[in-house]
Length: 208
Image 1 (cartoon, helix red, strand yellow):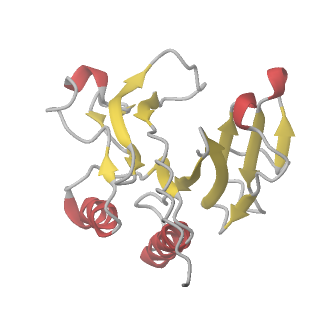
Image 2 (cartoon, helix red, strand yellow):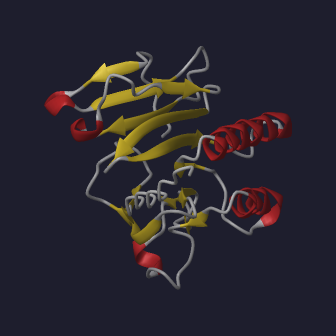
């Protein structure tokens, strides 16, 4: 997420595709990078705004929706933050109605449970039954999960991967393996997807 590429769909080396949502606001923008093995002609990006976009795709026959989010930081008006969360709720509501398994990744620009902004992120996850994969020290050592280091040396988690109830998070951590060219570390999660079992066929009945 937090991508500033204007072209909405871009094919990269190896067949991967980058789907982006960016309008006139160059201080926003989100993106979703999809591996070549999951690229299909019917993969479509749903753009809710410069800060929220959703992409539908399949893995092992399971329908998923990936949602990218970039929540405004404290310097923006409260109305813009509330509007961004409304768009996130709309993306999750649509996914639930379509019975899609959901993954939300993004820069939420807040520490969970800290102040009003942190409570808003936590309540959003709880309200949509999302597991915050990289949320707590009980899951991973602090050294493996901090995302942003301020100029004063203060380290915080502000980027999160939220995973829907029908998915199983194997591990989640921050990583230096992906150079983002910024003061942020990337966050990654390994998620297990269990294919749905086919419904048992109903026995046929005949009228006598």
